[in-house]
Length: 444
Image 1: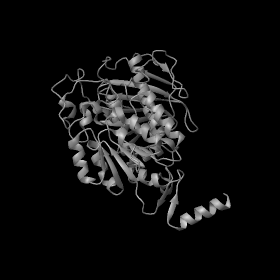
Image 2: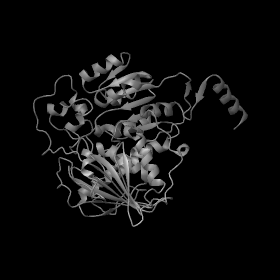
Image 3: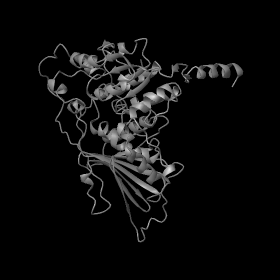
Image 4: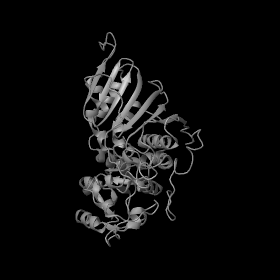
């Protein structure tokens, strides 16, 4: 370090300040200036930590929701259009709780402005969206802190499962499975019913997706679960792949230290393709390349009642609504978000080959999931579910949907470096990427 830089850094530190890579200087008690985009639903779960910072802007397409948020943040400026909100000059951070089909848009636009961003899951609704957002983050990872709202990741069981797999509690890893059993069946898009009320800016709700007629049922769900009224439709979401799949696959992804797959395939027993509604029953799988501690492994996702086979008669996997399972050369690990069990097999099955970590070598507790993002924004920019880690996971999940749409039973190859498949149909429009309405762009 040059003497001048050293003296400058020392002076700033002595004054109770902290210099971070972006050049922004945070005082010991300085707060983030946050824009809350999407003020209802999941946003309400974030009000507590946002109140400890400065909420300088709120944005929602529903005036009633915005007025409720304004009671919590009376000094925040109000917007209907998130694109205008992001240009407010004093913003340095964004919490995104919008519709699934705009997450990648808000995230990418925020990154273009060097804003720290906490984005609710799923990060993307297509392979292309996941790749664009992840690549944009990697260009500025030393400037901004990112976190995807898979808050279950903070449950200590996630780390205990990872340690068991990594440390050889079941020997050499062979296969991993994750599943979710939620079943919400719909025949197709909702038919038009009435006109949008004045307090709902319906055109902005549709956003970059093709226009669909208004129906009040899109807005009839309870806070935090209203997504179940629209996220199964292809133009608005990816069903349970992006919903609970974001949480449950995280159990497996965290343990695998996974990179992008080299292939994807969908089970022929999956639900028949519906051009309007994403599948309920589906099984997709990927080949995950080897790394420095395990061989190449197969990774599976099941949903909507399709399930992997249990390794033993006395464990009913169907009673684990959302879970993960790992097979190794010496046995199985079965887990849900909060618990785990080991089932060794073989003639000996004495587990003498395995030595648990001493307590002082356990992965430390994550603590507050949102708090980790806030601290990272003011400090080292490091979070556990950043846009690199989660971006790869969502790209993989979206690739599974590509394989499903190409045709169940047909394995497609994949090059993670280029984002291309060896199958021409897999690379077609509306498979790897989405088509957006005129006037809406992913990179802005």
